[in-house]
Length: 325
Image (cartoon, rainbow, N blue to C red; front, top):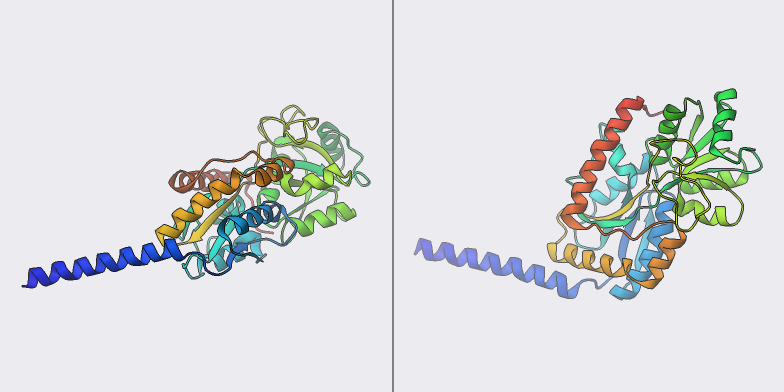
C-alpha cells in the first residue's frame, strides 16, 4: 500500500507540474510584459529594444512595457531583473556590458550565467569611433591618433558607464595606439551621446545602433567601425584595421534573458517569438539601419556564448588593469 500511495503521489505531482506548464503556455500572456532595460533611454539598447517590443506587441497581442533602470554600468537593471518574479511577465534586455561586469564588480548580487534563463541574442552591431566634427578636426583615425599623441589627455571620450564596452573599447584603443585619452562615464549611452552631439565631449566608442542616426544626419563624424568588415549601412566608413589599428574589434551585442525559474514553456515560447520577430521585415529593416546583422543564437548555445564573453572580457579587464574610476 505504501508503494501504491507513493506512486499515486508521484503521479499527482507530475500531473500538477504538467498542468502548470500547459497552463503557462496556453494562457500566457494575458497581461502586459515588462522588458527591463539597464540603461537610460536613447542608447543602443533602446535602439534595438523598441523596434523589437513593437513587433512582439503584435505577435503576442499584448503590450510590452520598457522599464529603463540605469546605473553602475548596467548592473542595477540586471539586479532588478534577476530578482523579478519568474512568472513570464518580466524579461531582461542586457548587453555585452553584463559579460564585463563580473570582472569589475566582485560583489554583484546576481550572476549573469546562473540567475537567468537564456532566450537569445538580439543584435550584434559593431562599435564605431565617432567624433564631434566641430570639436575634433581629425577626419581619419590616423589624424586622431596623431593629435592624441601630441596632446596627451586633452581629448576626452564618453561612455555608457564604468566597465561598459564603450569604456573598455577606449582603454583597448589607448593600449593598441599608445595614446592617452580622458574617460568621462555617464549613466547610459543615451546621455553620453547627447553630450557628444552637443559638443560637451570630444568622441565616443559607441555602438553603431545608437550613433547611426547622428552619423546619417551629420551631427557626428564616423572614423572607423571596430569590426572585421565594413557595416552595410555605412559602406564608406573604414574598418579599424583598414584605418591602421589592427586587432581593434569590439561589438556591443544585445540579448534577452528571463529570470531564473521562469516556466520552461514560457521560455520556449518567448524564444520562438524572438526568432519570428527577428525574421520580420520591420525588424530586419531596423537592424540594417542600425548597422547590425540578424543573429541566430538561442538557448543553450547562446548561454555558452555568454560564458565565453565573460572569460574574454575578464582577460581584457585584467590585462588593461581597468579599475572603476
